[in-house]
Image 1 (cartoon, rainbow, N blue to C red):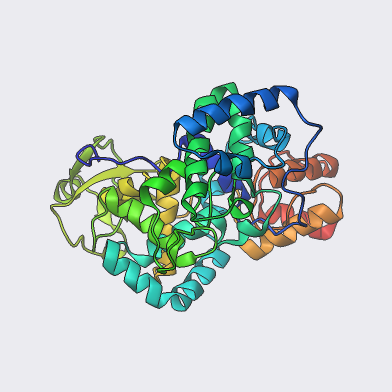
Image 2 (tube, rainbow, N blue to C red; image 1 turned 45 degrees about the vertical axis):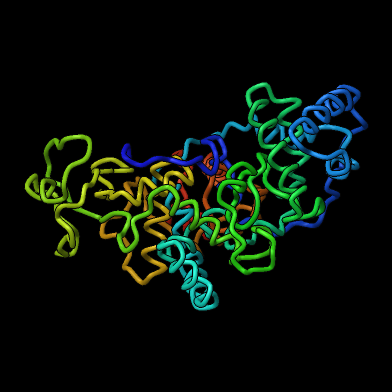
Amino acid sequence: MGQVAFLPARRTGFLSVLLSFLCALPLLAMPAFASAAADPGFEKWKKEFRKTAMKEGITAETFDRAFKGIDSPDQWVLDKASFQPEFKAPAWQYFDNRITKYAVQRGRAKKQELKPWLDKIQKQSGVNPNILLAIWSMESSFGAILDNQTVMRSVVRSLATLAYADPKRKKFGRSQLLAALKILQSGDIDESHLTGSWAGAMGHTQFIPTSYQAYAVDMDGDGKRDIWNSVPDALATAANLLDKNGWVSGQTWGYEVTIPDRKLPAGKLKISEWEKLGVKRVRGQKFPRPDDIAELKVPAGRKGPAFLMLKNFFVIKRYNNSDRYAAAVGILADQIGGAEPLTKDWKRPFTKLDQDEVIELQTKLKEKGYYDGEIDGKAGGGTRKAILKFEEEAGVELQGFPSKEVLELLRKN
């Protein structure tokens, strides 16, 4: 992708922690600004930042309206900013939790429901609708996360918290807060609906404020670029980001391939050159354009699935700079479009559960007092920690894997 003149990325790497909240079930509403007593230091900072904002063109009315009722930082935001996962997710866990039966079925249903809008967006941007649906699933579980008021907070308060109290993200917080105030001042959204993640990622497709400014689109023609309440606006905004960063219309993101049992070169080659090295497309399919440039990726090592990644894979990484993220978007998009599952499973040391079985596993762990998280069919760190507790008390080898073997043991106990 070195030849592409990149525009600003949607968000920085640390925001990937947001993915842990996908498919979260809506929780009871909580006051947006529920907090401890007013913080004198925060009030002093707020007065100084007000001067900075006004120099940047923010009116006093906009600033005061945005900060009404905000008199202390949000400790929840600081907790999330300092979060260190107990487990580093292996490839199988990452992909299992994102490429699910639910996501594929819901994506196909949304494709039918939104077909007129998706057709218009594709005509305007050239981006395949399946890619947009996969991004929507990955970012907000098709908007479900927007109803979770524990996760979705006041963007102004969250970014002010980072700017005031997080040394690592102070610069980020200030720049994004200024952008958020400009969004509010533009009239695209009012302060009560300017909500987002702990790091300020907003709406159905989770754009940080500066990226919203760069790419936001009013697709439905109501005069507002509303990625919070208008799905057409949100999907068109995602498409605009991909388009502006070099999306190649009519081409896929990559191909699942088989690779020979020998060392292969790093970097990019023509597909025809990869073929000469013994790399083949799965299921006996032919590559449609042998002169395309591609890079070999093996997200789970040589024993897992292998892919030749095309230019569009690297464009997806402008949305989230992660090989796993871009591959998951591509694989999910293909399956929403009717493609078969991968021919090779992710390298894993246990027998895989399907999503319904993971839900059963979580339910039984919760019933037995080992698990206190969401019953969401996603085996993350909380589920694996609960499995370890169960295995310890059951007197079996401690592995922490969401396996058929563990589920069978839970059924018997």
